[in-house]
Length: 425
Image (cartoon, rainbow, N blue to C red; front, top):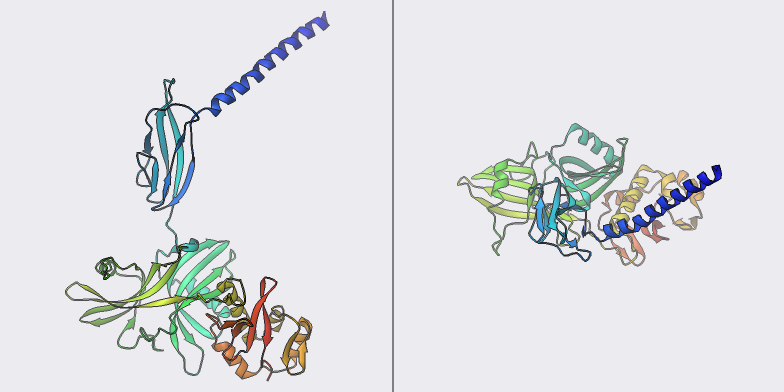
C-alpha cells in the first residue's frame, strides 16, 4: 500500500512539473514577441541628440506618442529624437497600443544628462580665483618645473581622475640674469593623498608676449595693470555678444578670467578666453583677448593673442604622442638640475658616451662617473633655459638644449636618453 501511494504521488509530481516546463517556452515566446525600445538608457551632454525607436517584433502598433518627464533635461520629438538640455536625469516614454490588446503599452528609457565638459573630461572652473590651497599646490608643483618660476593667476579648469588634475594660468618668469616673462598654462596632478606628482606646461604665449608684455613689478607695460581678481564683471561678459566677425558671426571666445585692465577713455581689458579648436577631437585652445569698453557703452575688439598649445610634431623619430615626449624631456631636465643621478640613470639607453674615451655601460657605471665629476655649467645653463616644449627633432631623435646637449629617442615603446654631450666639466 505504501509503495502504491508513493507511486501515485510521484506520478502527480511529474505531471505537475511537465505542465510547468511546457508553460515556460510559451511564456518566453510571448515575452520575445513584445515590442521593445532600441535603447533603455542614454547618457548625454547638452545639445546631444539620440534617436529612439520601437522594435515592433512583428506586432501592429497604433501611433506612438513620445513623452518626457522633464523637457528641460531632455526633449523628445514626435519621431522619438531626444535632445539633451540641462544636466540631470529624467525618463522618456513611448506610449502605444498593440493590436489585439486592450491596455496601452508604455516603454521607458532612462536619460542622464551630464554637466557639459571640456575635451578630455575637463570642466571649466566655476570660480577662477587662486585659493590658498591652489597656491600651495603650485608651490609643490614648482619642484617639477625647474628653470622657470610659475606664479598662479587663475584656475581655468579641473578634471576628476584618480585624484584631481588642475589647469592653472600662470605668469612664467625665466630664472636668468635678465628675467623674461610670458604667460603659460600648467596642468598639475594631485593624487588622492593630496601629493603633487606631476606638472606639465601645456601652452604658452612665449614668442607672442610683446602683445601683452609683463614687467617684473607685476604691472603690464603701457599702464595695463594686473587685475586684483580674475573674476570677470558680468558687464564684461555681455560685451562679448557685441563683437562681430567680418562674416557676420560672433567671436567664438568664451571669457574665463580677467587678466589686466587699463583706464583710458573707458576701460581696456585683457581677458583669458577659451574657444573650441578646429580639430575634430573637440579640444580647446586659449586666447588672450584685448577689448575696449567705451564710455558710450560700446565694446571694441583690440587684439587677440593665442596661448599656443604644445602641438609639436616628433613623428620623424617616434610614434609616441608629443605630450609623452615633452613630459619625458621635462623629467630629464629636473633630474639634471637637481643632480638626481639615480633617477636619470634609469632613463638612459646604454652604452652611452659621456666624454671622449669615457663611456657608461650601465646605470651603476653612469652613477659612479657622475659622482666623481663636476657638472659643466654651460651644459647646465643650456638645459635650464630649454622649456621642453616644441623641441627640435630629426631622425636622430629629439634635442634638449640649444646645442644638442641631450638627445632622446623612442626605444622599445618608451623614451630614452640616447646621447649626452658636454655634461662633465
